[in-house]
Amino acid sequence: MRKIIALLTLGVGVAISTPAPSIARVPLQATNVQKQTKDCCLADTLGLDTQIWGEDGKPGDWRAVLKSVDHSLKYLNTPGSAKVYRRYAKSGITRDRVRRSLVHFRKLVVAAKSPTDLQQAVKRDFVFYRSIGKDGKGDVLFTAYYEPMYAASRVRTEQYRYPLYRMPANFTKWSKPHPTRAQLEGRDGLLGAKSRLNGLELVYLSDRLDAFLTQVQGSARLQLTDGSEMSIGYAAKTNYPYTSIGKELAKDGKLPLAGLTLPVMIGYLSQHPWELNNYLPRNRSFVFFRKTYGAQATGSLGVPVTAERSIATDKSLMPPGALALMHTSLPFGETTEQMEYKTVSRFVLDQDAGSAIKGPGRVDYFMGTGKLAGDRAGITGSRGQLYYLLLK
Image (tube, rainbow, N blue to C red; front, top):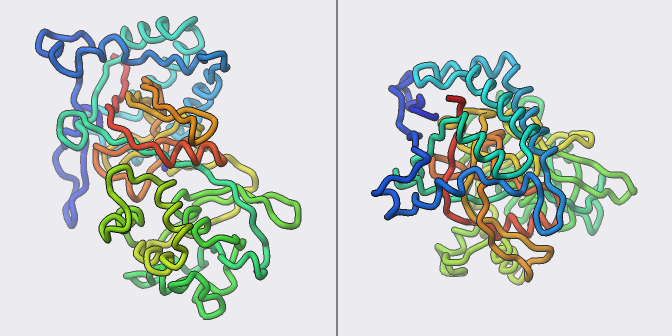
């Protein structure tokens, strides 16, 4: 499930290249030129995170913010993070600076009495750097992901036929290119005993699309037929890039690209189940799982991701574990029919990565667990800006 002045990128077949300008510092006081652009309103709204205290009579999530900060601090205290941050040495983005920024932000959250109070303190003490985005001008596409909940069986039955697999013990020794999805599970998902994965079945689901979406999301909570529960998380994946089934359907004229969302794709495949054999194998990538024994969903940093406070970015560019702020629109509501988009200026922690999240113009936002989180994630697809915050 993860640059700020200028970061280092890795070239194919080349050592570390010169710093890439993926982030640019932005002033928080609008100039005369900015007053004629979209930047004019950001100086007033940036960092006004009302969700920390709650609104519309709902409790705030300031404890979730602190918990997410603590998860990043746990990662930044590991030897592995020190090795990762060496790639940013020439950019001025050090592990120590990111860590000190988180510690100070934590103190501000605890001391603040209102959204405005926190906003003013952050603007006083921090420097804002904006991602250059897809267009070089800060345009970022925000999507969302979630942890689904499904019914499952430990054994194959007539109802529960579609397996999720453990990682093979010798997976690191598999020759490349790896077998494709169709070669591992069959075009119909039922290769079974003929698959090289036979005997590695972790659980079985009743719906092939649910099994596929679990691989896309990377984790799930399962209600088993024997009355027990199981949580599973990402273990490894084959060496193929992610292919969007929704875009494949649009490319073939089965669905319009405009307004294409996860619920629209699911609705189409539910009404045309025979299309699963044609389209799911187009995503040749295949994900393996492990039991997580009730632990929270975990991101690429090895620490839990927090609902509505963790994001996934391209970790070849973004500083892992860092404090960020997203300015975009998100859907809110108790049912799909009631969803309304609201503009948010929300503090988040960069704690995850995703195979489809590449470049400075993409962010994936963790919605949480369960159906409502899935409904909201499925229709999230808004433009906005992403900032990283470092102490002055």
